[in-house]
Image 1 (tube, one colour):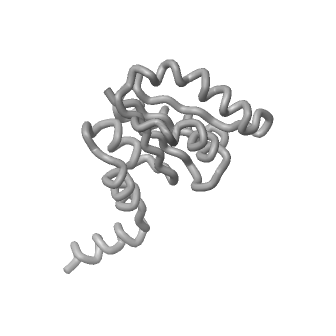
Image 2 (cartoon, one colour; image 1 turned 60 degrees about the vertical axis):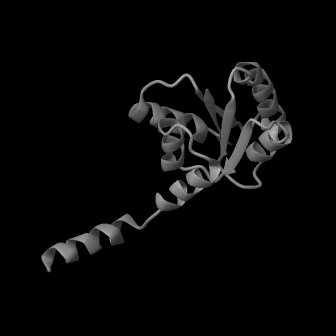
Length: 135
């Protein structure tokens, strides 16, 4: 079994989890933790410590962080980097998490490429499609 943990500044992680569940249905294996301005990294580390017993039942754990070098990602990295079950990816986006949740067996490299492919200029893309249809 595989778990997915989204970690972010503020409520981004909770919102991402909610969005995943809107598309994929309620998912017990998807977790979120957010860094609050009042609590800081110490509070986030405490939340993570409280979650770790729940994560023990999983063979693989993907951790998605919002920002490379940010406090949420650094906090998780310092706590989980030595766990061989854990992959930690920064720069989370919705296509990345949704693909991870819905596609068994994908690896970190695949998910990073999925995230990159999910970023495009929608207006330019759709405008280009309209031009091609007119020809």
